[in-house]
Image (cartoon, rainbow, N blue to C red; front, side, top):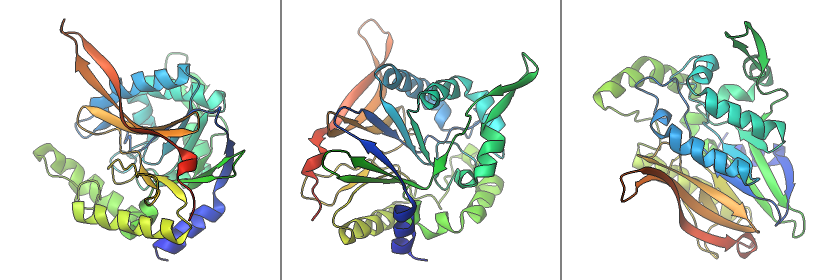
Length: 298
């Protein structure tokens, strides 16, 4: 199965979610939440991410996570990740209870494509304080892809992780997971990165982006939002409608995409220092806002 076939299959099976100009949505991906060990890249940006998430919750945004939210290659169980970042999952739980949470699986959390796995590991958790099972994410669903459909214009936005354009990380994910756990995770102590990741291999990154762009052009320039490569992308109207929200493991910052008032923006959250020496988590607009309707199908 090639890239086109994988993306075609994901598109055809995608759950359709209606939205309008009154809706507010935020897109993050590649959080790679770990167990707060030396290999947990998310831990460095946890405070930034948590602050941003609180902002979006209070402002009534719907949260869409486009894959690799949990780092289940380096970590063999979700339970250790939950213990390490309980505050984050408590906040995500609030989104879920209010039906403002949509999740997509990527190559690092591909085990979530198994509904039974999700139900077994994410529905409840053991609380040692009370000595009993507590509700976490009841009836949680993960998807390979989603389609946001504008209620007035019928314009579609296709959401997926993007590893459909990366054969080795889609079909060979189990082998890659084995290598990461046995080889690359220990080597991170010495600053050696995983060469199988397109986020750390520029040549592979370019290939993945080129394949996705080709699929977009073959599908009438369908507006498509992905993650996977960790490289933010925000095209101009008239260009190939290929968006990437970046990642939550950039050095000292996280990037994402927002949709508000029918317009899309690329944003960054990072820590700044005031003149008094206080640390402050700040949101910066990188690109946009640009009306979604400006990205017309060809």
